[in-house]
Image (tube, rainbow, N blue to C red):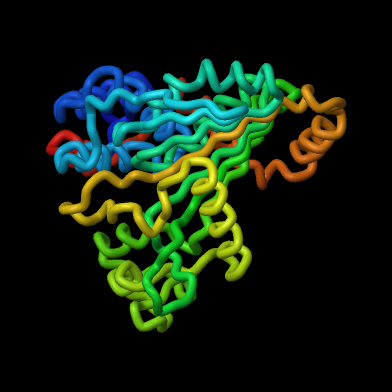
Length: 336
């Protein structure tokens, strides 16, 4: 680990990031089959600039292990297949280990049938959905990932929230050899994590994003957590959150946002989120020229809107230059 000239940061290589994550998880009794794939994805997320799945997420993992909300020795289980749907129980462990277990059979189904669905039960976090969608797309499939999440959106304020941020990610193969195109979004106007960042820093979130528990607009972050967060773009975000909820509940059979434990309550148990992953092989359904023309037009006409390009550039930079990590964050991880 080489220190930057900026004394408040350390410049860490990807190997450093992975070792830090693995050692920290192992220190809290996570077994190798859980810690190794999780550490690898945390390092990759940090290099790509995905804060929700990087070192800050590692802190959440360490807390979950310490409080017993997550099982560091869990053995994910492939349970049942119905048609093109494969079911995997994460068993209150971490998603990366379950994904690695299920991926070979999932891709076999997609290759044979043209479409496959992988339903995950008893999940802990949706933060790696864009990564796993990207990994499937790099194998030549259009991939869609969906998840329920901790309830933060009220269907009828001031009633308590019953819908989560319910993130989704779509990844498409890029035939020009530039990797994949990734589109991702959550449905809340501001994430719960960001609201908690405002609480910790004593700052105020922007207006028109949250309501207190009486249904009144608020910029008080604590009141926002006790109340609800507005859906992004009003009814548009609300409708997408409902669609994601319905699809996940239909395919997983569990994981309703309203039933997910509060990740910020030390006394809460396992979160038990539901995740879904789809793989579509366009070649199974005829010509793919229209899809290829559309994706190449996106690359040519709207590169500033393509998240995958900027994240890919960050990752390539990290391979040679490393990643600047705040010293304060490193100290929190080491002390956890």
